[in-house]
Length: 182
Image (cartoon, rainbow, N blue to C red; front, side, top):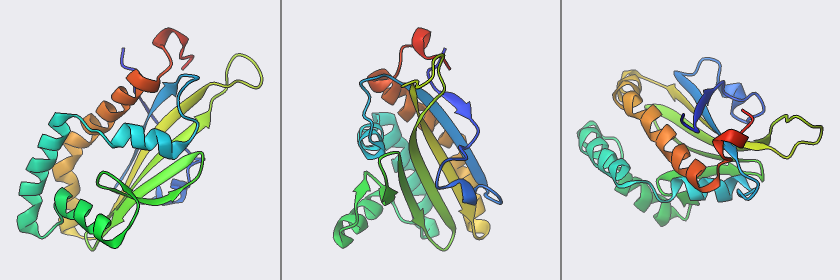
């Protein structure tokens, strides 16, 4: 059984007001072990900074497909973020960060994309439970046909990519399945 499970987008995320009317709003969670980072940005860096080779290959395919449409390639995104001195993790621009939630995103004329990595306590068998979970929430709002086309193009791979990143995080920071309580 996979340590990654689909969940409702969390109402305690700062992205919650943007769920209504979004073209995409989904969320996936993993149970965290006691030694997992207690800081959302640290967990996000560990989860996003070193993607698997096949994700890089998918990005190369994506880049080849979107370049003729005038959309930024991943290399152009990284270069631009470095050039303007904006904090980022790989291709993801940091929009805000608190101890419990790191929000990444990008806005352009075609669509707005936001990703939240939220760490929250979960109710356990005893009061004052220290069980935690990490939830990756994606919200996309399209502005035009090209944005909707792009979303349709990447959507089949989106779930695979999110689940894969969280599965890798679960191997490193996850609570053993027998002890997950979820």
